[in-house]
Length: 80
Image (cartoon, one colour):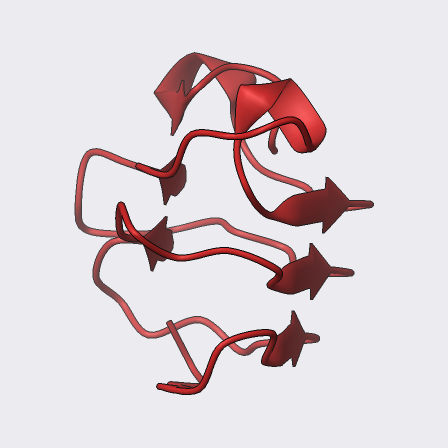
């Protein structure tokens, strides 16, 4: 991911490509807002991953919106 934030609730948006996996959000995170990202040409197998569990987007603990990637390469489905 083009930007790296370690604080809870950090906004992530308009990230440039990095040539590796797209966006990865680990379990135990919550309150992050991920929006307006375009994931393409990643060397890794995953466009978007969110390992958290909650009541927000696709049953994660984070909010995902207007991200463009391959839903077939996203876990859970529906975040990109």
